[in-house]
Length: 102
Length: 352
Image 1 (cartoon, rainbow over the protein chains, first blue to last red):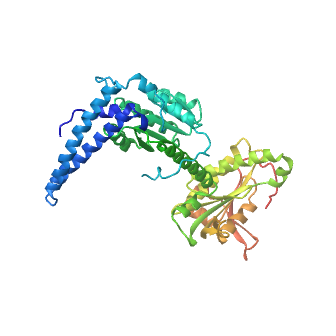
Image 2 (cartoon, rainbow over the protein chains, first blue to last red):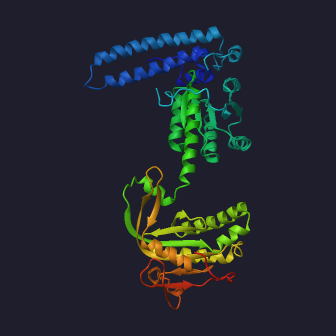
Image 3 (cartoon, helix red, strand yellow):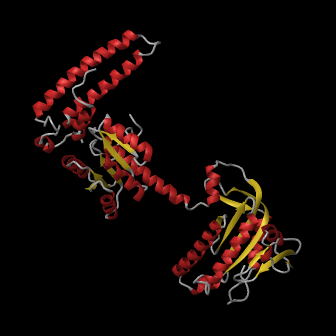
């Protein structure tokens, strides 16, 4: 599966978004990690002779498609919110925004 | 849902005092604000060991929180510092899923100093549920330790091994009793007497532990200790000699003097008393014999059965001759040996 964001970059985005409701990029980033886990699991299952390869191939293919969509989504969100794309730093105005759910 | 998440957040919990390490300013601010908004007190400090140490010495805390950032792996050392400096303080790490969480878990597998890891972004009540659960557990543990202190070591072993019925076994029994305690208690203010007797009994308890025995109970102005296993007579006599030395050298030797009684034989151990208010105890003729021998010991003397002294194998310490005396509750006169006090006798007579 092709990836646009490395695991370290995703960790960094989540790291800065401490609180759930004001951490939309972090939610997308978390979803990306979960999709990667799901993909890895399907690949491992596919290697087992006792399982139906077609099932796991279908899931893996769909997961990869979802992952690509969500990576593009994350890219857009970072641009819209004004994150520093190089350092992946949250913009100051977002850092100062009051949080709701915490 | 983890066990901790299933515990409802308690709004009636007293305010907590939290030490926070977060090397990112804006997340530190968010955490401090939100913790304060719940009525708790939080202060933040740097992540190095000296910084953590200074913060811990500056106040009392109920929990420690590290907001972990993947690019600062050394911050985890703050958790280790807390565990070493305040072993009972709950340690919580906030970490983002993926590599950061993996790093925290891998590190904690090696050092085992993080009590709970919470995934970021923080979801509603998760942090506060965890905090309250850990603090409650810490308080419960502390309470349990306080109660455990009220039980003898043998009693704790009894409970931990889930024993139910009494057991018959060979023990060496040692009794001490403070001489003239009734006169002393009448001549001293009670708080002073309480402090003095506590000091004496603490020193006696330490001598018992050092000799390999255990204090079964304190008897108000003395104690009952037992020694088990091979070498029990040797350990008990060695302990008695240490207590005699203490009697002769302590800085309270001119006011608090003890008599020491020793006997060896079969005893029954177990829990006695009504269900719900039981205590571990040792009973049997051997226990009575040691108590009676203690009662005839004058200040600083060891009175023991010849059998125990022979079993102890300390032939150099054996007094030249044994004597016999009638003892209350025993049909025939009882043979005993006496190790005289090594400190000048200040009083005559004994007090049962």
